[in-house]
Image 1 (cartoon, rainbow, N blue to C red):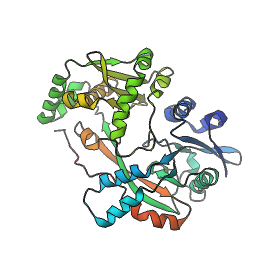
Image 2 (spheres, rainbow, N blue to C red):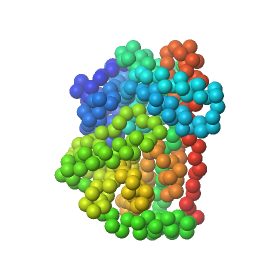
Image 3 (cartoon, rainbow, N blue to C red):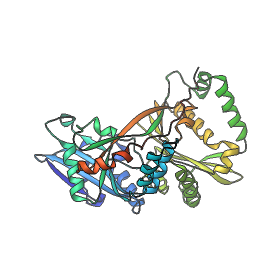
Length: 373
C-alpha cells in the first residue's frame, strides 16, 4: 500500500481524489475542501491522504489537525461529572496541562460525517491494515501527538492496537415521516403540551421577520453573523476549532442547496440559521443567536420548527441537527444517535497514563423528551 499525504488542496490531484466520491459527497467535494481550508487557516491544518494499491486509488482520507486547549478539556470533563469526587478533581485538574496538536480523522466542523472513503473490497478486510497505514502516515509526517478516530471509521476499517474508547455527544436527528405532507400533520402527531409550546413560540415572534439572506445580505451582516455565532460557540461544551461564518457566502455563491435565513427584530439581525440539503437530508448545524432576545422570544425554537416545515415541504427524509443542546432538541422530536470515538497513540504507556483522564470524557446526562402521541 502507498499512502501519500497532502497539506493543501492546492497540491491535491483531484482526478485521483474524486475517483471514490459519489455524486452527493458534498462535504468532500473539491469546492467544499477549498472553502473550508481557505476560511480556517488559523484554526486547522487540513490533511488529505490518497491510498493506492499497485497504482490504483483504493482510499481517500480527509482529516484536520487542531490545537487542543487543556482548559477546554477540563471544562468539558467538569460538565459531564457534576458530582464532586476528590480523585476526579485531580484528574480534571491534570487535563488543564493537555495543550498539544491533535489530529481528528474527519472534519472537526461536521464530526458526524464520515471523511474516509475506502473501496468496497478493502472495507474491514483484515488482510489489509489500512487504518494502521493511515495512522503511521499521520504520526510520521505531522506533529500531531494523538489521533481521534470517529465511530464512522470503525464501519470501514478494522480497529486494533493502541486505542482508548471515549463517549461523545450524540448526533440529534429527526426522521420526517411519510405521513407528514404539511406542517400541520407534524403538529397533529405531537401531544397537546407540545402544541401549546409551539403556539406560544409563534405568538412571541409575531414581530420577528424571517428572511432568506442573499449574497448582499451576507456581506452586510458578516460582522453581526460572526458575533451571533460566537455567542453559541462560546456556550458549547467542547469545540475543537472555531467555525468561520464567511463560509456561507462562499458556498451560497457556488451552490443552490445552501440556504441562510436571517431573523430580524426592528431591522436588527438577532439570529440566523443555515440549511444544507443533500440527498434528502437537511443539515441544520450552524446557528447564531442573540441570547438576551432568545430568552424573551425563543428564537431558537422558532428556527427548529421552521426547519421541520422546510423539510416536510421539500419532501426530505431526515434532519441532522448536530451534537449540541440534545435535551432541548428532543422536545421537537429529535432522537440521539449515540456515538463513540477512539483515541490513538503509538505508545501504549502514554495511553495508560492518560486513561484516567480520558475515562472522564463523557457527555452530560440529560433527559430524552418525546413529544409524539
